[in-house]
Image (cartoon, rainbow, N blue to C red):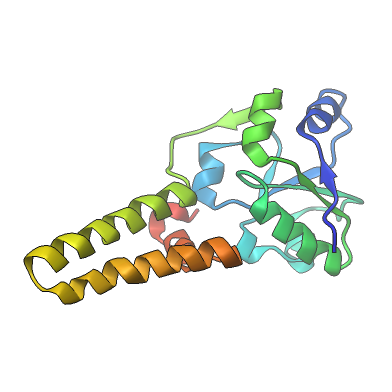
Length: 174
């Protein structure tokens, strides 16, 4: 199934003329608090469904525009929502592209994105495995190998277990 896209310039122009669709941001609450499109509603990807949309919004819109950081999570959300009978378009390039295109955003206090948290945590665990493997016991190299295999799997499957785990930590919740 092909995901329908809308360009950030179209979002900007529609917002400027008061003709924008309902915008659903599927990032974590922490990422949403950092920066989001003005007027967007935050419904994290793991909670997205037609039922959640209907209960979160006062009325079910004819069309939803879905956004995340760069576009991957919004494409997944659009696929699910479209399958459940809603018309959902993914904003091409995500919040980053919207900011670059001049879409009005609301900036809040800073939070590190889940993507960056994964890189920090994976790097720290890999380094720890190498240090412990060198100084304590060679078996600790297995930690680095496990993290490397997990990163390869995440890249190939577009599913990141570490990201899922980090997303439920208190600083990434509302």
